[in-house]
Length: 190
Image (cartoon, rainbow, N blue to C red; front, side, top):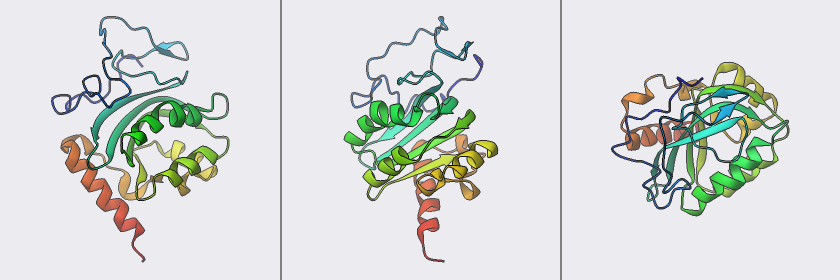
């Protein structure tokens, strides 16, 4: 797992450690020391700890005036043992929401497993967004199936057109706008 690195080609446009509104503002990265682990496996030092033992994040992009954030995740999303959604929401997402973010793009290619519990924190997060939304991009099929089993797909848009293999070819704001157009199409009456 130490070879899986967060997408870094947008660092010239956005770096959360230089963003005064980011929860990771001022963080200094030591790329020579692998200290963080998930189940005993070291992960790249570029991933950010937000309080979960099994799930790490990287803010790839935040555009406050448009209300967008692109977040890449790695690890196991475990609501059963660690209530990851509570930690993710209370200790991380609410900080971004306080700064005006109401459209969340979650890139989940490196989510290995999902263990559900209930959907109350997902519902709360969704309800707080008013005109915003949550999109799960490229989550593995078995993870999407497990999330659906717990009803989380009622709050997080996933699957179908949100399987965007070429997302890395977009500029960050263009990706946000593309995903917003996909979400808006889903919301139109059929």
